[in-house]
Image (tube, rainbow, N blue to C red; front, side, top):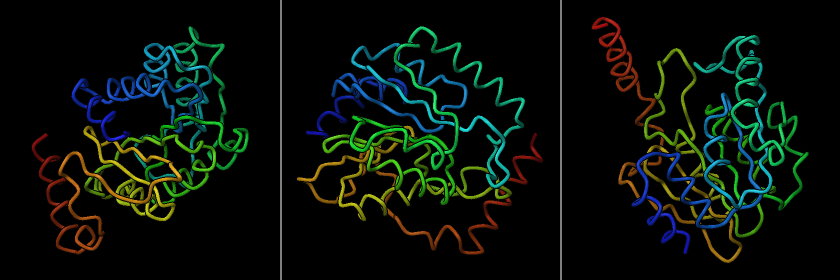
Length: 238
């Protein structure tokens, strides 16, 4: 059933915003959480387009993190502006939103186990970050609910090699196998995990981009050298 819903949503969508709006409308999701809200664009779109939403948890530290080596890690004053921007964009749904300012480990227990129909993960995409987010979030999802996410990139070198690798893929696949859940690879670097005690693990690639779920080829010296050379070439052309 999930696959049929997802495939229908893919056919009707031209962006990740449309994909998730269509999906949430299809399942009539009521209680949601978003991890990694940033400037609030995704939250605003879902709250505007999905009438079934009754409660929307917004989880984000909105502060500089010394141990997070990613391009989105800004200074504290910038994050204060992002938080203000998020609130402004979602004020129209203030009775539905619940702002939880902090890292996942600091605030996730404010959500009851089994409370969520759906959660969207778009936070710290390092191995440490996606591990913490999925492990701590999974109990909060009801049986029959879902976890979606962004930056399911077929290359760990999503950003420059001076940053930590992006390991949403393949870790999300490993996690799904560990908890015996189905996981779907979707267009626009998205993924969906279905939490269903009646189903078992399988990885369903609806894009054809994820034929190798290992890491060896991405970390061999020749591969890293190719990535670095490509980065230097792009910089030189600019």
